Image (cartoon, rainbow, N blue to C red; front, side, top):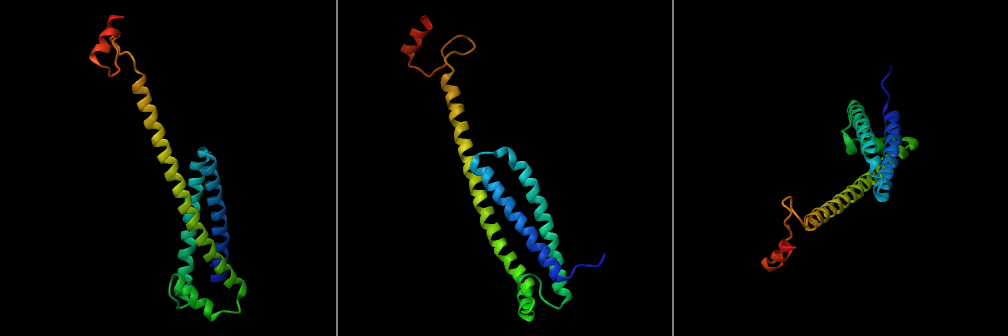
Amino acid sequence: MPTPDLAETIKAESALIERFVALLHEEQEALSSGNIGELPTLSQKKESFATELNALSRLRNEQLTALGLAEGRAGMDAWRAANPEKKAIVGAWDKTLSLAAEARELNRVNGELIRLRMEHNSKALDILVRSRDSLALYGPDGLSTSPEKDGDRRINDAV
């Protein structure tokens, strides 16, 4: 199977990152609606997309190097400047850059939503633990366990 050329790689990268952004939107919806049961599946899909995106990025860098260009954005900028007539590929690269920026922002917002949810859960757990401790009126020995004054305890013990 022949190695894809740079144009094919850029198109594939653009299409994949578009799907990745859609997945980040799904994740954000799940976080916003409290549907956290979906998160493990979405996380696995994100990991798979990240692996594929990294592979395409490596391939693109190899192709740029083979053309005598630098890796990364600098190499793409040089390729773009040398090939302005290849509008479809230039457009796909521009779309890739735009989608990458959107993905970074979505990932940042989703991370903040996760942080807020964890903070909320932690506070709720603290309340439950404190509530449980304050509701324990009698210990296993039948004596009151609430922190009362000695006079109050004697009354409870006498009852």
